[in-house]
Amino acid sequence: MNDTIVAPLARAQKLAETANWLALAAIVMIVLSTVGEFFVGPVLERIETFDQLRAAFVSLLIVVAINAILATPAFLLVGALSDMRVALTEYEGGRFFSGKANHAVRSAGEWTLYALGMKIVGAPTLHSWVEREHGGIQINYESFDLGLIAFAAFVVLVGRVLEAAAAIKAENDEIV
Image (cartoon, rainbow, N blue to C red; front, side, top):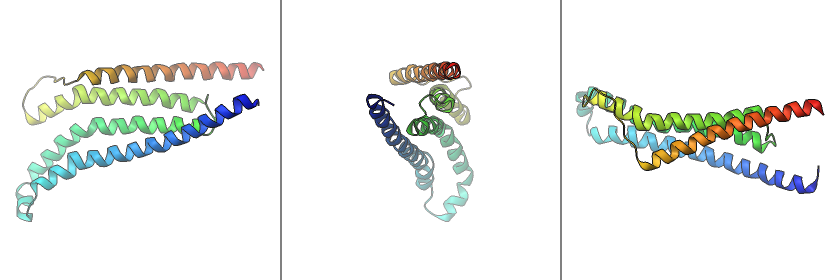
């Protein structure tokens, strides 16, 4: 292979390896932060003595259920990052046109859309139902969320384009 092609490919593989480790670090940080914020913190705030624990057991179950609902978008985002790690692992191995990598890119975008849907509609609605505040559907979004929806949709589209490009490459490889 030509040196003008080999050097950029080697750099791309090294960048994919670094990004893969960064994605793993992001997954760990999101999980630890979410568990601390939505589970450990609220439980520790309510427990001072064993008697209080026993008296507040049902209350704690409700708190954990509510916080599990609120934490769901973060855990769905972990799914997106996990899929992106699959793609980055493929790229690290020099498999830039693998079906596995391209599918993982598309899937990462889809998981991100699921996380945003849960953050904007799912979690607020379920939280409202559990708290018995309202019976309808709740929508809670910020302008930034709308930008993330567009970005995630573009990631899905890029994944589909990469899947099509890989299919074309495979067909061309058969001809040659």
